[in-house]
Image (cartoon, rainbow, N blue to C red; front, top):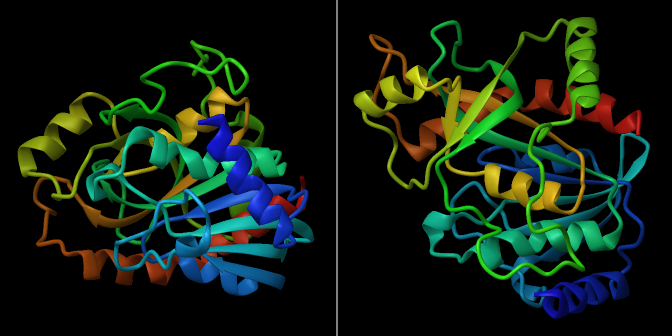
Length: 269
């Protein structure tokens, strides 16, 4: 894998992407945050060696480099998922490339279904921990040049960044929650019984991404900060028919508030 990481990294450096302070991975319906990036370089995933191509509507499949929050960042406008048929290595590669390009911190966002009865559609949840029901991306031979065989996950999400985000949200009158994110393979939305089960085992929100990227980042000692936008509810009595279009629409409505939090956090790096 290291050879592919280096090949992709060198290709992007040759395109002018050098020494970014942070990386951002943006999920369903949340890609417009990248409109705030200045002095930008855009590259389609399909033009990047070894990069998995986003096949899901709402994931534009572009790598964008520029200035955001006063810092140099590299943003992934769209991600790859296991349900698209990608392997563990393919899902892991973009995060590893971001690390090798020089990022010091990884920021992630996703659209998720809320299973906490206190949540409402349109709420933002800062992820404090996760339950991953996806295949672990580190399964297979380990390359010690990249990371340790058994990385600790005791602080998968950086506590100092979480505390800053909560403070920024309060200062900007943004309704925000803390919670545990649970990931499934998808691509089906959950059954009522599954929603109930996920709540019983400690989840506050459920989605189909993010945890593999965080595991890979922590394997390389990258601090992570992640947020879920609650686009639908898996709470008994509040479950409604859900489509990918409805998820995108609700995520888009929340984008300005999420952008405020991300901008403030990145500016402090």
